[in-house]
Image 1: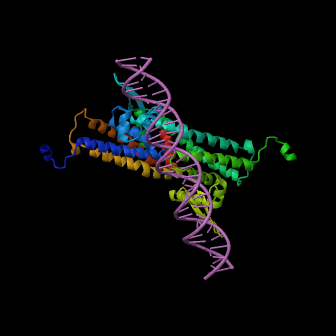
Image 2: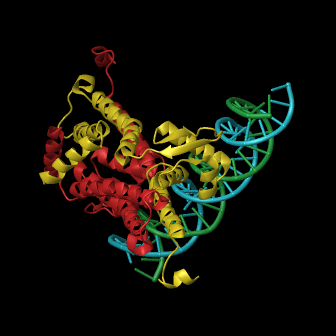
Image 3: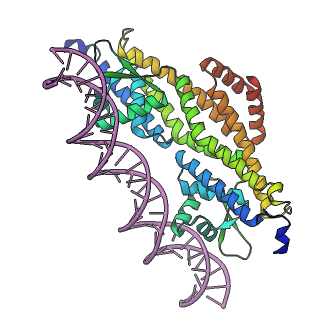
Length: 190
Length: 190
DNA sequence: TTATAGTTTCAGTACCCTCTGAAAGGTGGA
DNA sequence: TCCACCTTTCAGAGGGTACTGAAACTATAA
């Protein structure tokens, strides 16, 4: 083609877009994996997010090369999480899905869910453990008895987890505006 | 026993200690699992932390009911992470292991490692993607072209990840004293 | 009511990660 | 040098999760 000669190294924009999106999708999929979210779910979400355009089940199947069953289950799970939404198009029968647009909101949702599932049970266990070793429960223990050592360790851990808990709370309860204010304060504090 | 009659519901302190420790170990193991760390490693670490007393390989095998091979590999991995340490006892041949005592330091180490492994590659990918879609690379795109949408999404995500990155940096670069100051500021800020 | 388009479910399969246990490898003492 | 004790390695087994594909289901149009 004559037009292409103008810029010998010119790239095809559509192909380039595809490549960039694929890289994004792949990396986010890998990240999800080590975060306890399965790779496919993370990839589907990344795909919906990065294209910024509603997609139907077949679009997802084709782009990510997965089965209908897998696509259906993963899309439902993402809807349950609340980070993608179902969408109807007038006059069309099939359903479309789109990602939330606000990154802060998405991560808020994820953080809230993970806190509930992972942090809360640990906090509860810490309190139970501490109560099991209370003086009220088992009486005083000598300073060098193993019980004293375990009590101290529990207390240290609890202090740490309480702070973590509070940070999560802040993060979860705030929208982008509120959060970036917190972050500004945080970064200036040092 | 006559003495036991004084307090009918009295518990055996040693047994109680064991139970409390077991609960702690179990919950932390579960937490590790959903955080991409394997259950056994998390349990071993929890065991060493909560007892606050150096243990040898056989102690670990016995308490957690795992094989020698597994214990050996997991202990090495924990040493590599730097959250437990090898220890010699004068006149003894076998090696002992103990957990770091400072919770803040431990989580700093873990955060640093996870950032390196998981956050950094994503940040790099984001930059690569953005560069692939630069005007310099593929020329201007119409406002309603899919490329514009993807550019915008990439930029939003990058902004978010940059902030996350900075928070990690703060966390990693500071000991307990520095951190709790930051946390104090953070919690007051709202 | 039937035909059609699309979605969900789930039994079976494939894959991956973890764990075991035995053999090989070190290391200090006799 | 050999022995005793302890640690590390690794091939193979086991267990668990994710994926497929086909059948069942649902909803809409004719």
